[in-house]
Length: 549
Image 1 (cartoon, helix red, strand yellow):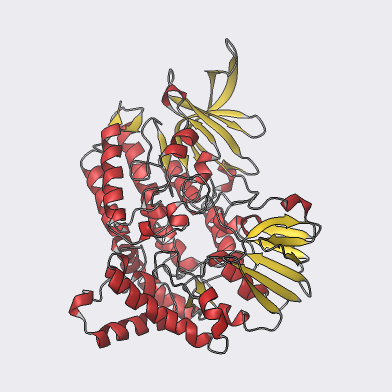
Image 2 (cartoon, rainbow, N blue to C red; image 1 turned 60 degrees about the horizontal axis):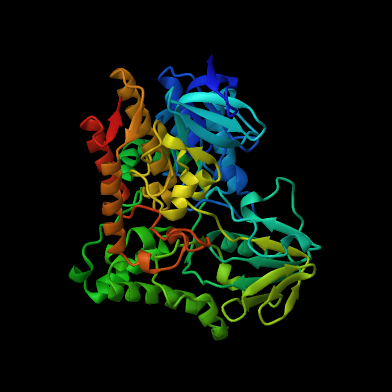
């Protein structure tokens, strides 16, 4: 670490700031690995984390029932076989508490915490063109400067908090799932309202159902759901997975979504209806995301194929709700295809609606208008009186974590202002006009949504680290994506996206859940394997499209 003089915000003023070779924002899956890689290079680096400990998503999302839906054997770091084998998950889809412990284990094993400043939010990051450095200011006023700034802020880390007017007037307890308190929340016997039935809301609903006194579930957009199969893992099981470390490491990097399964069942047209049904049945019975990411890719582009696959899943859901056909229209999607929204895994979620103390409120007929002191008021004038409100209303996905920081590049251009008009990046790795700013989990890369996160985030960290190493080796101090390269990537991204049914569906994938957000598919849908190959190609050719000087 060194001390440099940087121009302060006031005219003629100088401020003394600590200087680093690199600063990482975030201490989740990507941030921890990025810190490790840069330290390996001998760089002077520090990470900043808003939370009080490591974990990222798995630190903040501690709501009831939180667990990931990538299998434990592939939701992993791949840089160390010893690390892979030394941590034994207890089940196929571990819960939040175990995942948080795992990330702490990794951080402690690599002695990363000494270089992380916790409880510290980055408020602004401004590029100083005269010195080619970034000047960061924390929420408490501390200033630091750095040559390279790597944003590992997370793709789902900007929760929507002020969703309804009047939230502050509620006399009971109000919780936001993405900001769930560390202290235990007692819901036993209480009247609870849950707003939101996406992946998070589903996990909350199925988990708290046995203990609440009564529950009102406010349903606007029904979801296709797939039952999760979550067997326990023994030491013997994990030993077997350990023998496949190198195989799995290679496999996840080449598949469409970074999992160990892929679209390898042949073309839809080449299978008979009986063969297609058998494939769909086998994938559904796997109890994973395989029905979504390992079936027939034609369901993403062909409306007829989409309808067949969607109807298969609908029938599975109808069978579970056969005693309550009055719930079918409310809980089973009809106006969009399977897989064009995020597909949640669940455990007896639909059966919750069969409980006598549970009421489903149709928000398509009577949307929530406001929160009142007694509860929630809908457009039909009814006040739903409750003791607790749980808001599972999602995130400003992909872009929100970055636009909530005042990031200014060349000529003081504002990322927040630019992305309020059009969200664009250079492969989700850089944004033209913001030199030496690298990003992971940002828009227009698979890691923004459509990928097993550990797979895609590690790939991006490796690419960023290798790019910085290349620049240093060749005596270059500044790396910036060119306008031409960014334009080309945005055109390619949109061409691929617009050929799918995803862009015809309103979802957080398209930014539809945030009022005024520019409409563009946040995630690159050309496949993680294809994206990784393109990144490898750029690296092997000396990073064309990324100007260095």
